[in-house]
Length: 231
Image 1 (cartoon, rainbow, N blue to C red):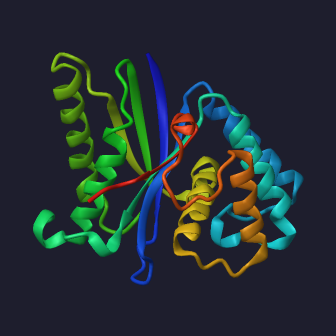
Image 2 (image 1 turned 135 degrees about the horizontal axis):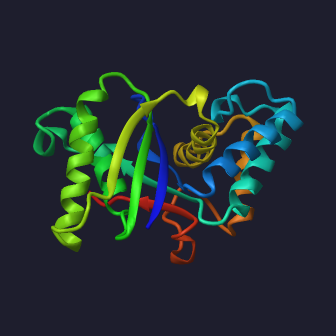
């Protein structure tokens, strides 16, 4: 049995964004301390003393951010998974009791429940957002219930813990923010800063992708996966 740590965040929640994206990094427990230390070390090398974040990509730190992408690519077992939702097609009134926040966590459920594998246990760390605590227990229970219906009611719950965390204190969640931000910016098609465009192009070149705002090929499913959810 392997323990997988999931560090997830969201992007595109502001009204003008055409797509909502939810996603992050799936990290085996054996790799987690190595990855964390490597992120901190790279930031120290580049004298990046602040939180690593897509919104903070700047010319002087472009080398740091490209090195972080290379680090992710080189880490065995570490995967990026995200789901993209066309906000123009969502119907919260019909499917979520007219509650967009409930609808948001239903999409979180889709992302998590489809990535659970028998024999593994999962520890979810979600970037903190307002009023999220009342949904976390339900999200955990729904993911576990779906898993047991699919694989067997006698199996242990795969999602063993779920926690709201502050990204400022977690380097792996910060790296997840960078990857998710790059995908979200590609969906919005408004990239005004050349350093951000350069970072997106570096991600595309690293994983041999022509663009980030589309579903990724099957060959990348276990490393870099963008799931375009069909409503």
